Image (cartoon, rainbow, N blue to C red; front, side, top):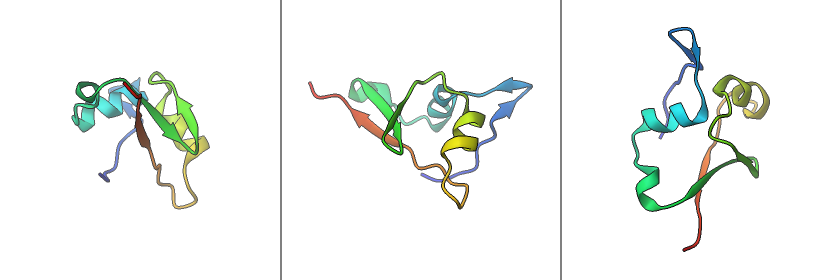
Length: 71
């Protein structure tokens, strides 16, 4: 999926968890998961602004991977 996401909404700093909720892809229904960027497991409470400033590619895109835990 690809779309523009603001890091602040109504004066609230959005987190990775907020992004996943807005994406509405039901990640939780498939079991425990971890979000990985550049091989780094990110806590869901990580602010989107921080992720954007420190983990974006040169084209300013973020490439997030969802990794599910083995049963």
